[in-house]
Image (cartoon, rainbow, N blue to C red):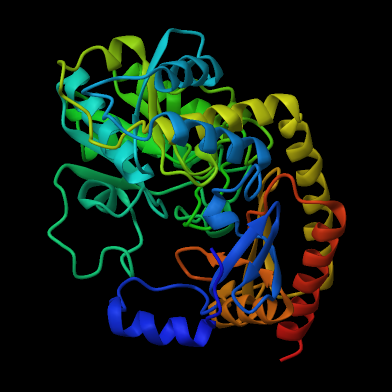
Length: 437
């Protein structure tokens, strides 16, 4: 589609026709994208370190994804799987079940968004266990629909003014070692934040009332918070010992983002249920719940579903994504990318006092910015300024974190070396600028 308009004109049109509640990080309007590059309607080029918020792991407009979408669109665009099913959804479920961690039989359902996947995972957990309580974590983000929003931790902007929230949601501290909620220090703490779950089950929510614990292996919007090696094995054991299901929310951390297909694999933990979305279908609206067969089979026919869930075009895109991972050795590329980012970020931490901590797994890497390393006062304004500086220089990068002071990197895993180096150089230039204020 050709366009002669400008970002300024589009912003004016938007202001007249769309509410301010639907905000954007930038005021630039994108016209096209390829791989790890973006071009706006004025023709300016940008390196993409945001990936549509962890959606474009295989890159923008990958030829194999485009070909699959075109082919499927010419054959069939929609019938509703619940009315007239089709092969791509069944084949995708088979492949996803085989990829998901766990040495047990699994089945899957498809929906349209990550929040919808979270809601359905909770439905399966509650139905199977005949219990209602769900435990989530501080700094968690699970979506914006009512139940998902209730599971999400950060109040502004995600929850403010939208209550009352869904009931039977309980919250415990997360494994945020840099700002330990228990005022302890790893490793001397012996990962007490995981043991806290057991205490919580005695003092706040009886195991007989708790259906599931839901956790992001690496907390995304919460600040790329990455638990220590012992954490999830402890958590999973407590769940198993108390007949509580463990749900891994892999919506942002999955599909190769951390160098493994799913981040929970770093801890050798097998979740009972897992949510997948974002990079699953390279930008097409598709999400999934993958779970133990006995859990998924417990719900009566027609108990879950949706008009658009598992759309055939989206499923074909996802099948192409899985082929790309295999044919292009994308997990190996992700691991190599992660090593480069780790080395560069650690070098920055030695150079810039504003960096309080470098954390993440593989190419899911982040910098927590602080005004003072001793007090750890969050540098949220500086993070915002860094985002704006990078955009002006041609790099799209996002901040995150409950305190708004974390810079996250979500570039496509297929980014070329020269593009990566140019993007990192811009980020380094920005760090110099905000450090010299």
